[in-house]
Amino acid sequence: MIRALLALFLLAMPAMAEPIRLKDLVEFDGVRGNDLVGYGLVVGLNGTGDGLRNAPFTEEIMSNLLERLGVNVTGENFRPKNVAAVFVTARLPPFARAGGQIDVTVSAIGDANSLLGGTLIMTPLNAADGQIYAVAQGTIIAGGISAEGEAARVVQGVPTAGMIPSGARVEREVEFDFTALTTIRLALRSPDFTTAARIEGVINQEFGQGVAFMLDAGTVAMDLDRANMPSPAHVIGRIENLVVEPETRARVVVDQRSGTIVMGEDVRISRVAVAQGNLTLRVEEAPVVVQPNPFSEGETIVVPRSSASIDQSGGTGLAEVQAGTDLSQVVAGLNALGVAPNDMIDILKSINAAGALHAEFIVN
Image 1 (cartoon, rainbow, N blue to C red):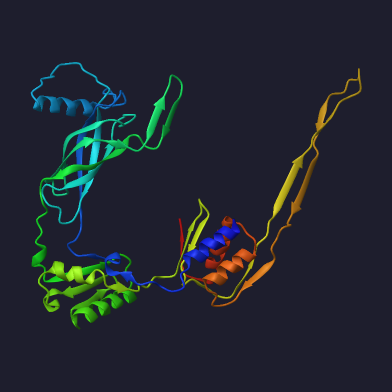
Image 2 (cartoon, rainbow, N blue to C red):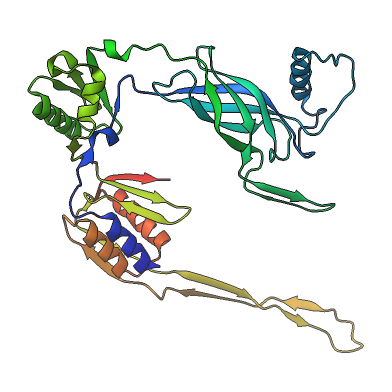
């Protein structure tokens, strides 16, 4: 396991930082999606729908839908088991046009057991402004399996949620005139002053000095008038494939549940000594039953007998890590201790607490 962990570390450590396309480092101002949500009804389920006694809102929406279709069910006592109330969510991509299609996700909100084989009835999808931007309808593709018998049930995955590929049609476009922009901002996904300065330099090298200027660690602004291009779309199309070498902070990310440790290549450790050993405390109880002689007036008693021992074998002694140690030397040093990944996490915690780990230490 230690060798596999060492191999993982070495694979995660590049020899040098690789240039990255600008489109993979930043978000462009005005180029964003919008979240949509709706409340609808799924029909055609094989007896796995909502129990209408426990989900009265399902009966209400079903009654309203039937009345809109001209079917009067007022006062009728109907309790089908093949319908389920659901929330429908989707993301309206940037520059989506009327008539386009988008994927939707359908999730049960009642006590339905499964949405397998169900069909979503026409559901309007609203944005945060309350306007309807798309309408969803179609057959649900659920990602789970559910089976049950008289006294047992098995469920694999999540059968109460699914999706409809291209299940919604865009009915309204977002009102935004992208061509009217005179300045566009580039928002870094991982804010860093050095990376922002490099982006500014690359853009100015492409268009000339003064076109791009860094506002802060997470924002670079561009003057589109100085770029001398027909439209903002032409400017973005020209700069999004420019390559920049990003600068990242030194980080150590630890997941205690899985025992995973990921380090960046810039992690450094000051001179420190590390000792790791196993301490085993063993206490054993072996009570003895003492009985009186036959036909005597004595009584049976239990005499306690205990043994305790401490075993401190298996220790790895004291290992010293020199100042300025880089990632490969840190991994080699920890691997030389012969410790398990969980023990390695404890060692890294201790090194960080001692102030010798020069990196951002993140524990999940």
